Length: 325
Image (cartoon, rainbow, N blue to C red; front, side, top):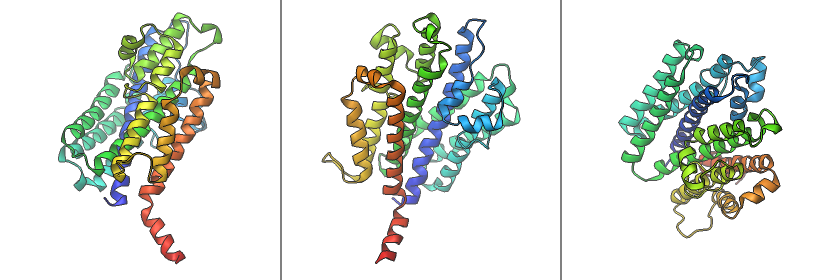
């Protein structure tokens, strides 16, 4: 497969997953607001922190009001990570490689873009309850995933899209967990209170993991939630599961069936996966959850850079090698 085509497919997967995660975060935060005590203000700043775009937001807004945060996260084209920006880029990547996609995938991606444009025209972020709109967007993205899952051949293109999707999902799971630990709780005195329980429950719901968690662990316990979202080997949104699947995608792409690694991206993915595979939640808590997650995010960014240099800059590398000869 041409590196140009692989690059577009990879970023199609990342942008769709990014938009779906944003829709998920917004929906869960609205639900959390319904359960908070009446004397507590709505908390919208954690959503901005979860996306990593804090500095950009405060450069454009003075307060973390609901309408401003919703517009920034969903429709602001000056925010390169907003849902509309991500979906616009996903559509553009799909358009460029349209001949490599199924007809249904292109049509549903285009419909998703039109849906977001319609939401922007109607100023959905000013509605009293915009949850039905974000639920519709999330379901449209899940529909695209379902179409791909049931109709796309498991060849290089499939694995590049899955690679982008799982790396993006691992990043967003780490961010939302980090934000809960440091920002969502108004006071250290609230640890262990019903309010703390509501926040942990909202965190699990944001990754559609609440019911699964309850079946595995029962009662809500912070260390168990951390173990579930970071180390669980079977939950498809845990960081470990996502990185394990990303490593598997890399092996399928390179044709490496013997284990180990044959390029720098595979080496970095294997090291990161094995680090999590043999970790224990007590070690993470003792190390410091924020520090641990921050270190993970740095390593995931490095992995992303290595994937880019290994597969998507082949032409640049080839040209530079010829010039050196």
